[in-house]
View 1 (tube, rainbow, N blue to C red):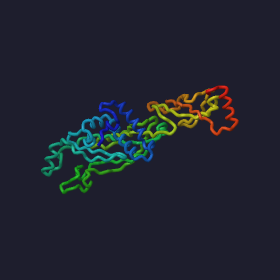
View 2 (view 1 turned 180 degrees about the horizontal axis):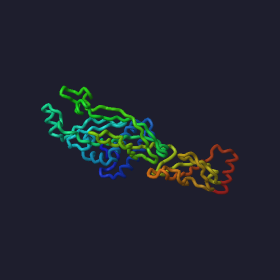
View 3 (view 1 turned 30 degrees about the vertical axis):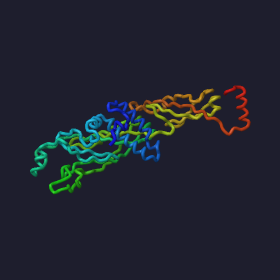
View 4 (view 1 turned 90 degrees about the horizontal axis):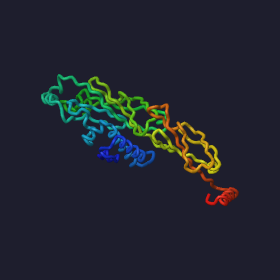
Length: 327
């Protein structure tokens, strides 16, 4: 398994900001929409997302730094004498029940002498584990907010074998040796306006089930925003290009500029140079912390030269050249 830090190209001591910036750069570079039909790019994109999901979460990163590639096989609280089961969400692979290196001696003796493990002890309430689920949305959805129906799967300890996968008679008949029973469920999720690639949306109580009556964990949606053909995003601001005919650039006039809310009119002053940028206030992305506030849209002029000139038009340009050499 490749090292997650190497995948993102950051050192182990990298800050959260450095990790986020590296992820955004690589995600845009290897996104399937940017590389249609490229299986290697798609695989690389999934690898980058997986690395970011771990390194962007403080608790997961801490466990990854400690246990390496086996971090997800060691449940939170390892060594407490309790077996923890984790739930898979969406496209994530389900995790089997984890064998804790440190176990309660009463569990071992109970198994040796035919008794039930942990007899006489009530199970400790334990909050369910948090889960991550990668989700992709369009720029328009990031601007207006979006809704998704999620297909999730709960993994519950098998009551027949108490999650061990085996009984005194052999492989557990209740779970076929898996130790868990899988129960699908469907939930609706709302993604707020203003999210960006790398944003994490917390869905309270939609994570793994707790034990002994404890509460569920939380589900975090790790957002990836698809590249847009007309706009480039810079935080809460957007950039685009607007085509301006040569005559309009010279004499002035009005052009239409695309925005996420439709086209708007932009007045082009006379003698506008190619590449000049106009700021359209409040037509960028909504701010996630203040959805009623928006960034700006910056429109750069791209002058369109006329083609298929008539003899008369060519003659006029020749006159201009005579009047203004080098124009």
